[in-house]
Length: 316
Image 1: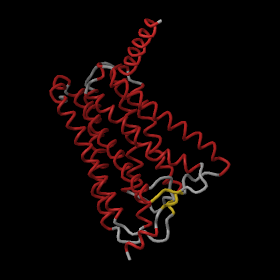
Image 2: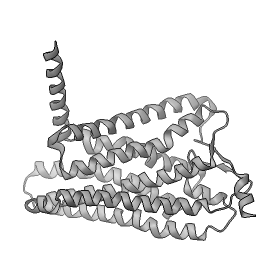
Image 3: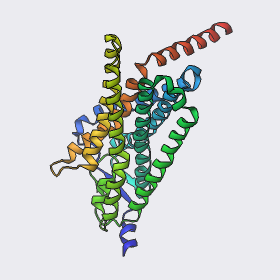
Image 4: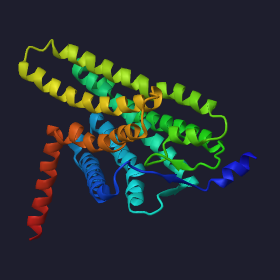
C-alpha cells in the first residue's frame, strides 16, 4: 500500500508566488535581474580571490566558499521559479523535488557554517591579532571548510532520505515556489514524527548554535573595540559589524521563524515572503555587504583591471 501511494505522485505542482496575473511579467523581470546580479556578484568575488594573491588569506578562503554557496543556493530555486512563471503547468517531477530539497539544504546549511567561520576569523583577527597567523593557520582553515562540507552533505542526505521514505497520496499541490521541506511534510500521508524530530535536533545544530556563536563573536569584537581610543576605528568597526549582523539576522531570523518556531497565524503569503528573504535577498546582498564595500576587494579589482589593460595595450 505504501508503494502504491508513492507511485501515484509522479510530480508536484508548485503554486509559486502569490502575485496577480497582470504583475507576472514585472515580477519575472525583477527576479531575473536579482538572479543575474547574484550570479555575477558572487562570480566576481570568486574570480578575484582566485586571481589575486593578496586575497589568499583565511578570511577570503571562507568568503570564496560563501560566494560559491550563495551562487548555488540561489540557483537551486530561482531558475525553476522563473521557468514556472512562464509555464502553464508549474510542475516539478518527484525526483526533481527530492533533488531540490537535497541541494537546498546542502547550500543553506553550508552558508550557516561559513558565516560562523567568518565571524570567528574576525573575532581572532581583532581580539588576538598577535596570534592570528598561529590560530588561523592554513591547515586549520582548510579543515574548517572541509568539515563544513562533510557535515552539510550528511545532514542534507539524512533529511532527503527521510522524506523519500514517506508516502504521498492524492494531494500534490505545494503552496510554495520551491519544494520546501515543511510543505512536503504537510502533504505526506504517513508518519512524519521522525522527520520532525530530526528537524528539531539538527535545526539546533545548523541554525541555533551558529546563530549564538556569531552573535557571541561580534559581542566580544564590540567589547574589544571599545577599548580602542580612536573614534574613527570604532565608527568603521560598528559600520562593518552592523552590516554583517543585519544580513546574519535576516538569514537566521527568517529560517528560525519558518522552521523552528512556526506560528499558527502564519499565512502562506507571509511564509512565502519570508522564504524569498533568505533564498533570494540574502545571496544577493552578501557580495555587497562582505566584499564590494571591502578595500581589499576594490584593490584587487584595480590591480587585475590594470594588469589586463597593460596586456591589451602591449598587444596593440
